[in-house]
Image 1: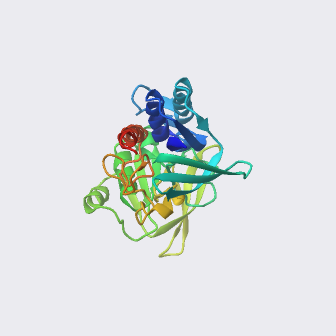
Image 2: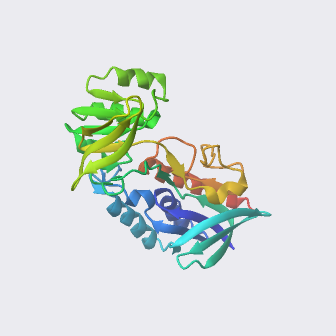
Image 3: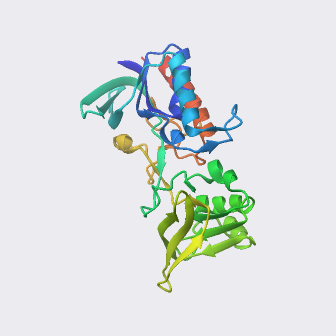
Length: 308
C-alpha cells in the first residue's frame, strides 16, 4: 500500500515526484518511459533556466533530479485500469513482457499526458523533427523568414498561423473544412494577414521532402485537383488525444477524454488528482505542466494529511 502513486514520468509527473520525495512520502512513479512527449520535442528555448535546450536533454534533467532525490521509478509499465476500492485506488498494468502488475494507493496523480493527433499520410513520420512539428510555440521560432504551412482549422491552427505570420515570410493554411471552426476574432485576423495564403476545403495527402520537408501535397475537394506547395516547415494542429483510457471507470473525463480538474488539480473523486496535458485546462506547455504537477502534489499532500 502506497500513500501516493504518480502515473507518468514527464514534466508533470517529475515535478510531483520531486516534491513527494522531499516530503518523504511512501510513493512510487510508474510510467511507460521517462520524458513522454517532452523527449520528442526538438529545440526548446522557452523553459525557464535554460537559454536553449532540447527535449532529450530536458527529459534527462528531469530524470536526473528524480534520481538525485531517490525517487522509486518503475519504467516500461503500461497502465490499463484505475478503479476505486473503498477509500483506496487499485491500478492494474502490464510491463514490457506482458506480465500483469497491480498496485494500491491512498491517492493518485495521473500525469500520463496526451499525444498529438496525426494525419496518417506518407512523409509524416519520416519528416517529424525534420521540418514537421506538432508544436508551433515550441518550434516556430526556428522558421524565421522561411515558408511554412499550418494544417488544421481550429483554434490551435489559427494561433499557429497568427504566430508564424510574424516570423515566416509566407504562411500557407490547409484546412480540410470549407471554413475555420475556431473563434471569430482569430478567423478575422487570419483572413486579413497579407502573408497568409488560405487553402480551404483541401485534404493533405503527402508531406514531401528529401532529407527534410520541402513541400506539402494536397487534394482540392472542389476541383478534384492535386497540388503541391513549396514549404520548409509544416505545423500540424488537428487536435490532441489524452492518454486517459485507464481512468474511464472513475467518471472524471469530459466528452473529449480530458480529465476534469479544478485549479487545485482535484477531480470529482476524492484522492484522485491529475496534471499536465491530460487535463481540461488549455495550453499544453512544459512549464505549465511542471506547475500543475507541483499543485497536484500539494493538493494530494493536503488530502493525505486528513486521510483516516
